[in-house]
Length: 414
Length: 106
Image 1 (cartoon, rainbow over the protein chains, first blue to last red):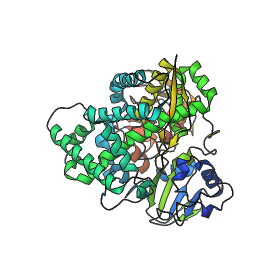
Image 2: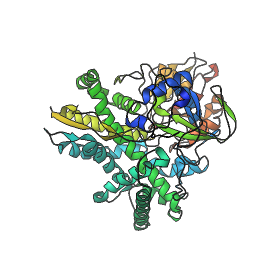
Image 3: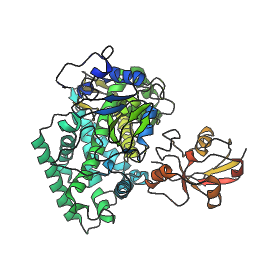
Image 4: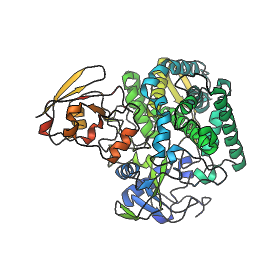
């Protein structure tokens, strides 16, 4: 099956003729119809051929929860994206490990993003958000992705790593390179450029490690946390493990919040009644943040591998089979979410969504993400009556990152 | 109906008349007790209904299974008496039970 062929019609094509790994579905934002058919007709669906090999698609909310919380039958090793690793850069990261190793490595960094730490960071984040918004060119059309979403998340990442602030754009570049490999997610990164970027990332962080070793740093600094924990104090000696976990933390804090920060603007523009609700009652912001994350679902999937022969919703899955949980489909499943295709900022139970995943690999930074988006919208509403979308966004070519390259807007001050 | 007291991190007490056969998490949510998020809705899959039991009530509440234990493992503030309240089914024998809630859910 080739992805250069035209996309089949989502309503009439035979399911076996549809490639559910085709990254153009996300770039063209036409995945909804294809995945609605899977949820209705074949919720646990086997695709024998794809550029990423054979795989199962799991598309209903309840089935995804069942797979995601069953780490014994569904392994996260060796990787959690649909494409397999290339041999040159065998990154090791705790998101792609099973217990007990997973638990040890995750615990070493988890406290950095625990809510009591976040409370200390709120004022700093707010001042940085305020600076970003105050510098926006009022009266001009500009790219929200570049000027707000990327800027905000990059500054946040630099804060978490205590990374040299003036070099912070490197973090975003490395993150983009890591997720854009064709064999990983159907992206379009040049393999040589990607490898060079990842090696530069490793070299930079190895230097920071040695500079930081033995000095007293704030507990928010992820490198120092790794150094302090007995289980990870020597991780710098295992370059692919060190690099892997750095990339995990960088990607985890980058694409997700960036694309939700853009998605929220788009969703409110497509739903002016909801924008009016927000203008009338800004106490809806926390609830809206959860709804934005559900509506956007910035990571489209996570992948597992069956550790034994088993049955899932009537389908026989064999040991070793690749199982892809399509989160963005679970978040549109009318069996679990009322009116799932509508964007409703005062939804009942808005936290009941699947964008953070469930089970032991559930997003570690979920509260940080929510806090950043909450502060962003609180500060936007202090300044602008309308962030107006001027043209349709350009979206990312990927079946993993469900996001935006560009969103042209104008801001209208209060 | 057994009376159960949930204590917020700031010390505020909430005593509820709990429904037998329903989970502690659902009883707390249905009575509007703050401090329990329960993002996954009771599937033992998110860890955001974390509570601390009083030691006297550990036995009545039963033992965490391997999945619950794995979810609790990710909590930086886990204690010996930590449980997920969605996994505790209320029985008549729990009358008078007190549980503390953590500083945060994540």
